[in-house]
Length: 225
Image (cartoon, rainbow, N blue to C red):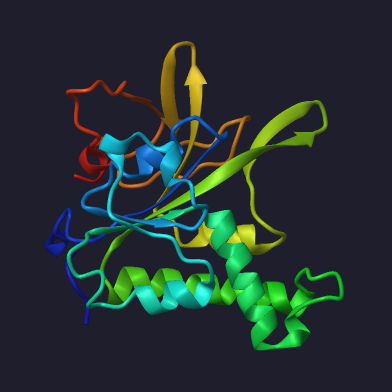
């Protein structure tokens, strides 16, 4: 059925966003500023977040636990799923895949070429399930690493092998968190420093307001709106 683009209702669709940055720069706190978030603390790092910014959380030790927890009934009271971190999520997926079928692994415990393909497809399946069936916003948190490209040093997300391509494909937004002077910022436009992703009029560098004891942690909530 052909439809008129004027029929699209702004804000009707959920948002998928990737947030990357160095350890300790406040990625998890920023991620939890999304609306009504469930913290999927795969890195077991909730103790590093100030208590007033913490949200309800799970700490799965395996990918099977994540699948068991993310049911419509369990997450019905939440609007956003925060995966913290995406790199650890993919590591758990890799262990799950090799246990499922040894051909997905190598003797040293790493993924085989077929394993990378399988994990990439499973990552996409999970994102589609959370987005289209559970109907949740998705926030993926990744550590950033430096990658030398000739004389230039670029920031990249820390993730195993070719799965990085699967990570970026499903995202509506992708930003790197950095310090610029005394300001913490997130950039949604590609530049010499990093690959990023902007859409829906959200691009460029945004200043992240400093949090005070009386200020709400709502940066992503306002951004989504």
